[in-house]
Amino acid sequence: QVQLVESGGGLVQPGGSLRLSCAASGSIGSIGGMGWYRQAPGKQRELVAIVTNSNTADYALSVKGRFTISRDNARNTVDLQMNSLKPEDTAVYYCNAQIRRSGTAQFLYYWGQGTQVTVSS
Image (cartoon, rainbow, N blue to C red):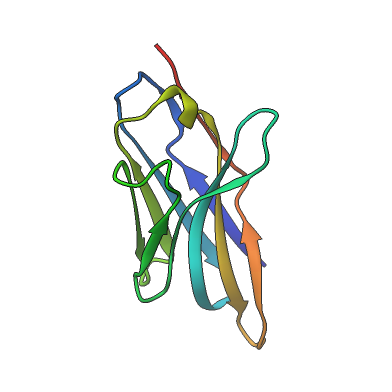
C-alpha cells in the first residue's frame, strides 16, 4: 500500500502565507514527479505546481512568483510554500505523486485526501 498524507491547510487573510506538506509512505520503490493540484467549488481540478525527482519545478501562471514547490527525496515529501495569497487561491489542495511500488515495474499516480485552503478576510 502507498499513501499520500497532506497537512498544513487552513484559513488565512489575503496577503498571508501558508505551507502545505505531503508525505508519501508505504511500499515505495521509487518516486517520479510530485505535484500539487487544487479544486475550487464548481471548477475542475487544476495543476498548481510540479517538481521532478531532479528538482526541476514548473508552476501555473496564476501562482508563479508567489508559490514555491520543493521536495525532499530522502524523506519522500513535497511541500508547497504559498505567499501573497489571494481569495482566488481558495480551494482544496491535493498532493499527487508518480510512484513505483516495491517489487513492481510500473509507475502509478497516487493522490492525497486533500486539504482545504481558505483565503478570506
